Length: 333
Length: 294
Image 1 (tube, rainbow over the protein chains, first blue to last red):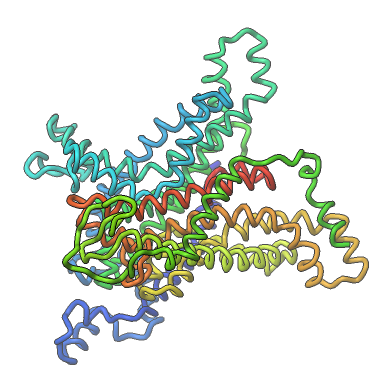
Image 2: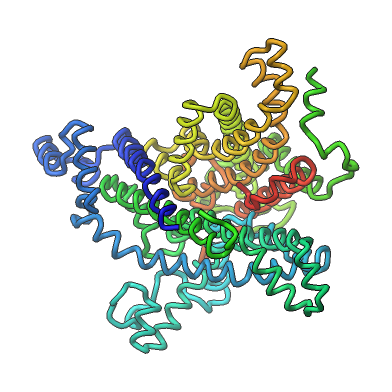
């Protein structure tokens, strides 16, 4: 197992290297001069040249790339043009918000989708199956950012029961410790702040999770349908187990293997979905940061963020592969 | 020879009774409806979609038959006309993306699977690198740096969408190349190009069609997402995505601005997904395991 993981990690290194090159080239091939954008159109040539020198933009491309690689290997992506702080620091302050949002989206999606999927799959062609299948289809067809807008319209606008944007109401949250508002507030036993953070989280998490919900529900359903026909299920029934036990012990635990893969695959979609959902809700995470950085042509920050997202994606896929062995002991590495 | 080739490769489908697939039919009907709207939209539109009438701005929907059936936006432009025009660009972009990425993916997948060796290794490394980007992120990055525009948008969307075709097609080609009819063709002196074009590709079309349907659904959403973020279609072209982007700051006051374009995206994508589901059940049930709308 450890050997397998090591081999996999070694295998991803060249991929990461190629990705960094691709991102680097893409950014530098682009039209639009960051110095002009940041300093304004009326700057004189001398100031532009000085800024270029400071940011290393006057060097040839391969020198810039080599420099970038050398520092990136040490976890340093340079200084952000816009925030004039180390890129890693800027990303670190924004990451907890995105992780908190993603975790809640996954929670909402799995907690709704798996029971619904198991229920639907165990009773094919019943009303619950039809309801579940329709929900699944609606879920995968729903543009998450449109759902976000509609939720704001309904729950924040017409009914006025949830806040429209941000992570917390000003003044409620205590001092920031980990950056995860819910964890921090729980630790400080600040119950109003926990509730406040949850109300802010609900709409973005639901909007972000809706596609995953649809897909998971469909996969769970078809996986349950498939497992129901296996011989060991017939055996379990034949030895007189209650239907409830057969369903939740034998069927569900076996049906969840493909579900885990799909959760892993969909985490990537979730990551990129967060970019757009965060923008709608003015959620101060790394996704909205990326849009800000792109508009400002903040090269180091964009590179840092794209690399962070990609690294997260690659890491998630590795973890999912490793999880297989735990869920299904028949799989050996 | 060709008909024999096809029959030999599509095993179970011949035994299944041909029945009307409700899903495929409903989905196909929805898609056909929106395609007709896309083609005839400009003729149906009651107003010029870009005509600004500041005297008639922000009017709520007035119902069928009225001057502005679905209301007007912040510049007094007619929502119904814009939605009708919008379907054209949204569908056109999606079709272009599906065809280009399908062509690219099937070709590369077939080559990769048939030749193996170094060619296969190179193509699979490329797949691995491009696939390591979270979906949409690559599109956003490409668009942000190349700038808005239809051509750039298609390029940015194709960048990752050829991969599902390539992967599935490669796998199928690996097994197809060992089949008797391919071996027979080789013995008869067919060269590699003839084998790939006449014997391999025809057997990949059904699967690719199913993948293509799902790719179409995801392209429509991705186009709308990018346009919504301001890095897709230029703002002067009305599409469902740009309409939603325009609507964003007015959502607290004017519910009809985001409702109608979003509803169009949702229904179109729903129709295409239904069609894809139906086609998959009919043509290639093996794909079912992937679950997601690629």
